[in-house]
Length: 101
Image 1 (tube, helix red, strand yellow):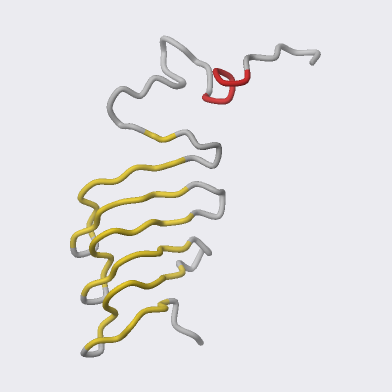
Image 2 (cartoon, rainbow, N blue to C red):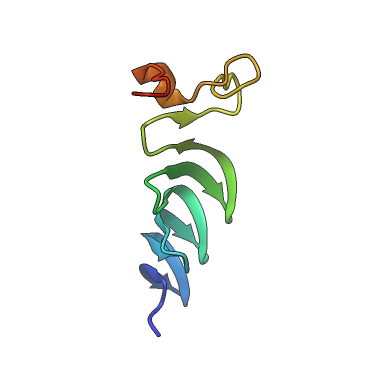
């Protein structure tokens, strides 16, 4: 069985820039320290989305998720698919097509 890590080893630990493949096929590309995500890195999801973040010892410090269509999720000021406006991002960009189209 091959390792899910593709990084340099320092003192038996994954260090520096590299890649980790999750069991489900999603891939993290970025910095490692002591075998954990640490520094800048991005998880690339099979659905086309990606989560770019700053990590500290395996924990997210700050990050953002970008959907396949380019919409960036923002936890503050999020105004897509809310009670006030139920439209999705693509409906706002491309317009809403009613039934029969």
